[in-house]
Image 1 (spheres, one colour):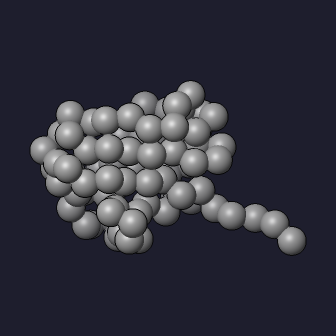
Image 2: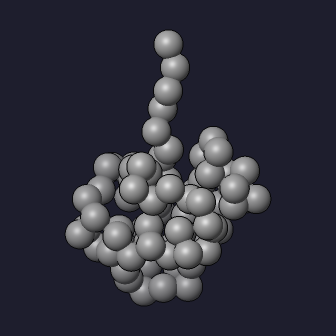
Length: 77
């Protein structure tokens, strides 16, 4: 199981703060593709992913037991 956490507008879009995916492993890119397919309008091209509290690259592998966080772009002034 992979734990996924949502923040800011992504939390509103998903309708939840976190969920568990029944997967043994997947890449960060596969996770982003899954999120875009599951939650249309997710904006996968603008989202950063942290795996176990460290920023991850699209080709990085996520394994069962890992915790992922989707981090939307930050704006402000």
